[in-house]
Length: 397
Ligand code: C5P
Image (cartoon, rainbow, N blue to C red; front, side, top):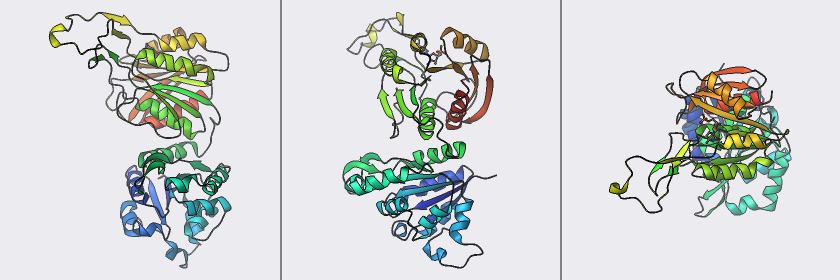
């Protein structure tokens, strides 16, 4: 059955970006219905969202029309996930007090599904004591899930806090809520994740590396965040920026990654070593770019630290350590060996020789193995879905 997403749009300039969210969710096969407040219609029209969602938009004019059942009840019962974006200071205030004076706020009160909130406003507005109080107050109700605003250029020409979460983050939030149905089973857990391929430089421009983009670890971090975890992401990202809400540590090579992981490991309840660490580095590093004629015919190599093995040695009884094994051919035998050798609690055997899975793809497939002999095969799915399946699996550890 199609997943049903209700989107409430408030009156802010970020409303135009929600059009992209509607389009993406519709194209992903979901049913999308949209409520526009009166002020939202100053920014985008019912025709825009009706065209993108392939369904008439709802406004307060519809609220006051006779329906077989009251519209806010129908819509509230219909939705699997309710998104409010942009959440304005005004709607935030109403929701925090349980006020119901338009279709959007009435529908929130008439629904029971998880609600994803993406506030957007000018920095001064966002930082007002009253606004922050309303925000904290609203979030004490666990059905509300926050997509905290980020930092960036605002429509008032200022750079500051208050910028609405990017459309891709909203879409990811919806997908997470569809999987978890709002449960926060990692609430308060400290999760440490490494991701991306390390680069081992020979000189300032040449390096030994691999095609890993870090999308899998990013998905694990997002999924953990959506399930309530406190997330630290050690990453080598060059193609994406880290979403707000998690602590990010950028590194380049294996030694830097090792340092960041060892520093943060003692505080972590769950650690996932998802990064594709280059196994070797050039034995020498030249701080000046080597002229072509000076490049060695044969490159002397040196090993890099085995980070996960070191983490395995330091692991305490309160900690769980999960590794990845990117393989071609038989993926299970080498993964089982690594599970034992590196003192892991679980490992993700990850084929990288399939089309549209593994390095760089938005999709993946894997077999999860653990020390208790569990073996769970996850067929091809989005990296975010795979991430949620892994967190489900980790519960059994
Ligand atoms: O490269 P390999 O398949 O052996 O990686 C298995 C696991 O070991 C992965 O979790 C990877 O992140 C980790 N690893 C590491 N340090 C290395 C090489 C791999 O932590 N030098």
